[in-house]
Image (cartoon, rainbow, N blue to C red):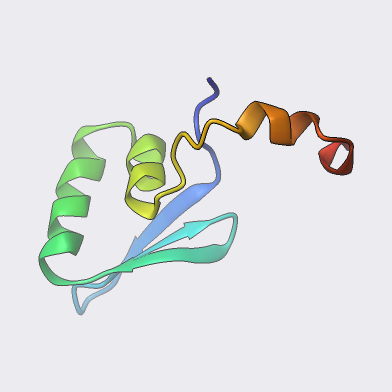
Length: 73
């Protein structure tokens, strides 16, 4: 399985964390959830942590979707 890519996050001064995937907002975390996320992202693989927190993690159809004629480049 390939490693997730394209995730980034921005922590704002009011305690809000916005996770983006390829430039689009994927999740907004506030309060305690934002704190837990920041602690976890510092201690592990940031891309995997962000994929898990946004729910974009291991759907099982990644390979078949990639091979579909519509998605070939």
